[in-house]
Image 1 (cartoon, rainbow, N blue to C red):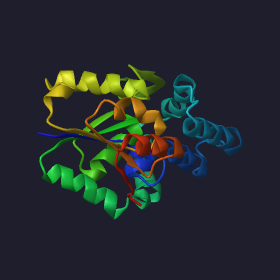
Image 2 (cartoon, rainbow, N blue to C red):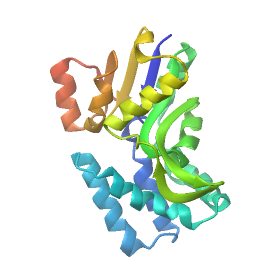
Image 3 (tube, rainbow, N blue to C red):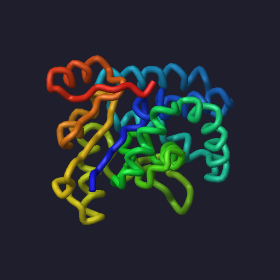
Image 4 (cartoon, one colour):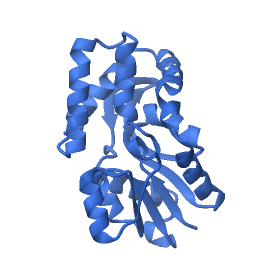
Length: 220
């Protein structure tokens, strides 16, 4: 059996779900535009530059989840899927995922974006497993804080290894392991699999992929 891992934002999606979730809440008037829009843009720029402080970002990104009942958040998310996410899903991305699933691969989305935002998106693709940053909860409601290791940079490797240990399948037990990603922030995990694939990569990852002979593909 092959292991196939997909980054989500700017890989399977032609955009960033983290960024767009904040923009969606701003457009709905849930978050104050003057307070949140420039900060959202600033964090997004830091992510692309590889300078993001994940703890500071999670404090910003998860805090709104604690202010509203889960039922309200779920209703907003359903509208978010229609307004922002489905327009970012192209046929090539759906076909790539469907092909690996049909071939019998063990497939998972591995993303730094929190599981509240990303779990419905993984389901939209039909991917059965999600490894994501986890927001802490009290009962069904969110506390506004993360729990466990953020699934970001080297944390993606740690979280993947924890998941594989939990299912009794270490990485070395797979005949082939593939990871699709657009970002140099994912180099730690790209270097751990047997088949790293750069998807519409940023310039840093493109240079790395070309120098190492990794496949470079587009899903746009």
